Length: 460
Image (cartoon, rainbow, N blue to C red; front, side):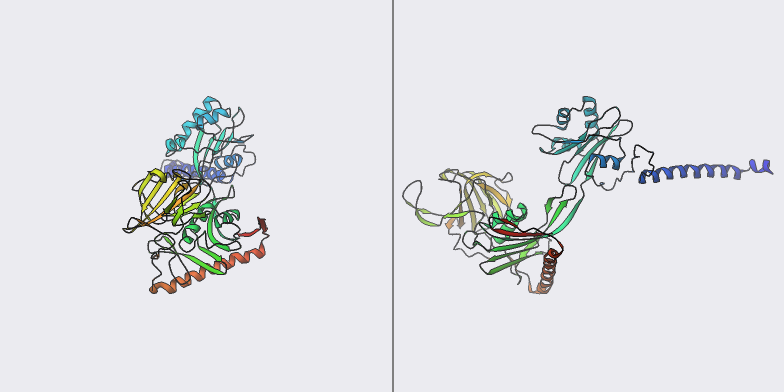
């Protein structure tokens, strides 16, 4: 019976099946072990399977990254920064990696997607964490090459180098900031921790309704609600979302504006009644400045005789940002005689604005460039015929200078009556969120700091 069974096709089939099952069992146990790193006698972790569809998350230290990728153990990790005019190769040479390791590291990075661009544009000041290799320990380098990604380079147990891009873990945090104005809105908001890009956004949307030089008084207050993206490893803000809500209390008169997306998905701002904050042109395209000279006849400070002054002068520190007063196209950007460095923007067939005595232009400004209202176009300077750093600002109607403070400009589109109830419900949700952030104070110990008699609270 045994002999007959041995020679049957069924016998051969059973042998093949036993071999396949044994092979599958061995492979499965290897994968399970590599996921858990559960064997205490194993000195070197086994590399986990790579996820080719999504970037894996980075870790805070070289040691933790080695545990993550299953590299050769490292010791004595240190940090440096990429200096001006350095490449990755020269930086590694400076921290005493030998030439053979440097070449292998660069070769491994070259296998990444867009490797040439990555190596060419590594930012000055980039943090480089590293552990130098030895006979017993592995080498590793961690590059925080932009706000959201790290590059990790490591050795395996065979001393081969590998590179991979990792996503820095982040979280979104809804934030409400309250502040009291002591000098200018700009300075007071910076002191209470409003990120600069969010602050410029706030000034841009308030600039249609508020004359920052004449209407703001000491003791006025503001509130601003926005969402920030935080780097979990460094606990720093890496990005902010468009403002959700902003409020300004001017000597008892309160202005409230809410974010509501238009039909194209872009954020627009309206008051409680659905009226748009926008005007065709901002009255004051600068913040933190003092109105030093108005529109009209005056004794010229340099020429010494009475002369018509066809614009507004705003005295401000050198380098203060200047905003585009409205959407439009740059008509002129360059030197313009006594005006010095000069920009002129065409907004409509009727209106243009001009900005003079600048110290420099935004790098993206050129003739023919389309600009958005509130975006930085240049910086306060002292070029041309000028007695000190200031912005000379002109509004031209039909190519003739007019007083910016006297013109009545049309508003943007208001919320249509057909969707006003949806807008009211949207406002209600924002205010509920604001109340929740305020109530969170009861469960947190938040210090109230005093900076030049300004009290502020930051709620997350």
